Figure 1 (spheres, one colour):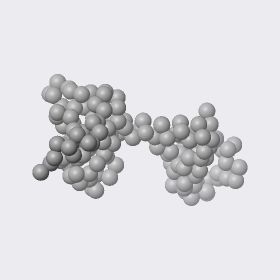
Figure 2 (cartoon, rainbow, N blue to C red):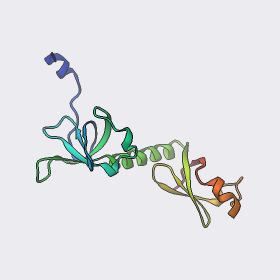
Figure 3 (cartoon, rainbow, N blue to C red):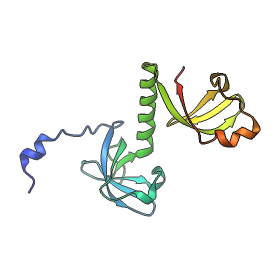
Figure 4 (cartoon, rainbow, N blue to C red):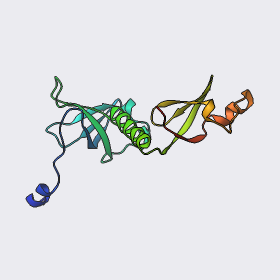
Length: 153
């Protein structure tokens, strides 16, 4: 039995629109995922926002962006994709502030450099790749490679 003291000792979630909160998966449906964030009603997230759909399980914890506390049907409007996007930008900004390096995976070779996924698509100029000469024959070995780079503005 849950004790009132146990419930009161846990920090209350911040239910403000635009905040990122932890949610727990209640149900995985064919097109959507039902998520409980501890508010008065659950939220539904489109299944397309999840990358590893086969491994989703009831009870899994996910970070979600609280878009609206209530829509016309009384449901909480949540987005896993927007939460991940914001968290990635915060990470990028933090790396930039600390003059650190960020890792990314090469998605494609484009004129003048590489497109790299660092949580968001980013352009890595060839002029910053001192050790790499991109030729037609090396494109297939470059795509998918992991690179570390500094973040510049």
